[in-house]
Length: 416
Ligand code: UDX
Image (tube, rainbow, N blue to C red; front, side, top):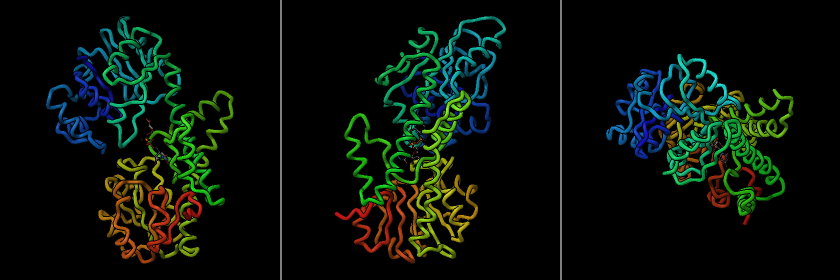
């Protein structure tokens, strides 16, 4: 059992703290936000993440997980300190400082300089980069079953100690230097975003040549060099990571005199998709959405989260409202987080009530709940049975047989 302090109880920090506690370590999670810490002590979560509340409560009850706003309490006796926000100050005793936040290349060196300059007297410490690869909505599963763990440091001894901490996860461990570890994080996110923008661009071509992008992706994905993951054509990516990381990587390249053509196009292809949606819905509704009511299935940037950061639904609803439509929305968990970002959108807490009287529905995220909707009932409730499936969750043949005017993404005419 190791003594660990996690600084910053946001998304990454809270999941990291709860999982390491669940692995049998004693973890103190530290945050400067009094309210957040008070709530966590009462078992109130600051974010929606499947399984997190139960994990936090179980480990708090067992005494392995605790919360504090005090650095001295949090760091007392700690051998490892994970940074999941900014940089700590006032440290004594041997400590391995681990950067978990996604930070510009070179930040690890910078943290080392800051700590060195802040110490009253020189003592041993090491800085390690250990980027997270957690996906919202499956963060705990991603932590407990990672594809790999990346550990970067100039001090091999410190890297080995952090590697030992991850041994119970039985995943490949990549040990490298600080900057390379920081770059692996950016490159991984940027490449995943590139895969999505590629398949989205291909989807447009599939539509024109009558091919089915979903089957194209499946056929490509059998090739282990390509892989089926992250080849789901749709409304593109959003969230707190891909937009920020692709942009930051492009900026780092530009700053150093390079022209990040691929990254720039990856971003352009992604955001152009959102602009396309309102135009295609307009076409489906006879060329004009003025006075029409359009409902959005899903508001957060993806399913299984309430996170609205860079959510496509905001841009899509803004474009529809600007074109004169009345817009409604439904999301299983993001109603509260969505409301302030889309004041013109009427948000419902019942999907069928939302659909009632709509002229068209747009599938924005792929919640299982949407895949299991009673489509007969939806068809009856809709004023006109028009569905724009922005996540290809329905079977085009079935939808047409049911009498829907149905449009998917890149699924050609999909006649079998
Ligand atoms: C991502 C990375 O996956 C994770 O490793 C990293 O740590 C943080 O950033 P997250 O942003 O939570 O995780 O979401 P993810 O599941 O990766 O989806 C990102 C976006 O891509 C979402 O908007 C999703 O809807 C979209 N997406 C994903 C697609 O459009 N097609 C796909 O095939 C996969």
